[in-house]
Length: 65
Ligand SMILES: [Zn+2]
Image 1: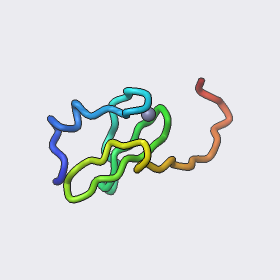
Image 2: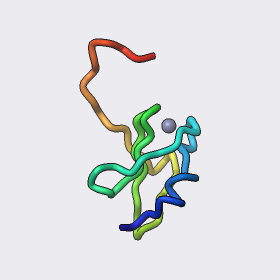
Image 3: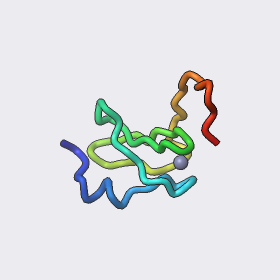
């Protein structure tokens, strides 16, 4: 385990301030609001918008806005 629960609790997306969640493989931190995934490098979460990537998902029929 790289990232502690305590650290996860205080980490938020720098863009929209949504608390991020660990991705299932545990290799990134995902913001479910703007769908950015922030990388984890050497056990250090990189909470930089420039370093993030946007996850592509199938558009759902019921848009949640
Ligand atoms: Zn966000």
